[in-house]
Length: 341
Image (tube, rainbow, N blue to C red):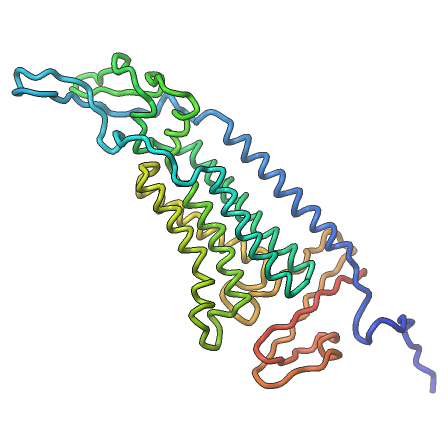
């Protein structure tokens, strides 16, 4: 009988494991932050560009009597009432909204890492927050530039010269475009970008991502009843996003439809971004597990090993290292191993 040849494995490496290769992690981190930066710069470029077909966006005007009877009245041109609301300062300026929807979720991720101390999970949470914010802003800016629309306070911001209005042939109706505005150019451009609400979209994108993050960490919606405090902590970001969105409506910054579509966009991108970084969204067994870095070249093989726990038994560390399905009390254990082919 021949003697079976044993593999040369260093003594300090546990049986069933391979040396950890950090190369895929480092490459993925570089790609993640580079792509976020590039998309942010593209978004800034879109924001600085002029509104698409600005001169072709028309405001209808009607003749309206100022006083007296119909025959003795003095007529003037009047725009739709939904554009005649007064200008009010934004309750939460755009720069401070961006600060809140990015920094607050980042602080939540950092707070949880004080306990877990997992660098890859920390990176996953940070990149997830940034991706949600940047991707959402990119989508919103495209829609604002190419669709937009007039805000409720457009007439006050525009300060139009009514002598430049032109009459529709054959009808007692006049039209006005941006060339008749005499207000501040930057404010006029902003007043033509009502759809969708950036505040609503950004706040709900960040709030949705961090609410899903909190749910995954606290297991609020799982196979057991959760406490009221855990539920309130999980839905608190969504309450805050609702207040931000509502403030834009009561200050005449947006129409209701702008805010509703902003909320839909934010919710959608928040969910999609979370799923792009974590194994599941609503499945409580896996939704806290960050996805491993994808293979960046043919020489890298990524293996994601799951050990699913049942309620009352705990598997050995050796079983987990070998990649066996291990029941361990309701929490999913993971190990990522990058191996060189």
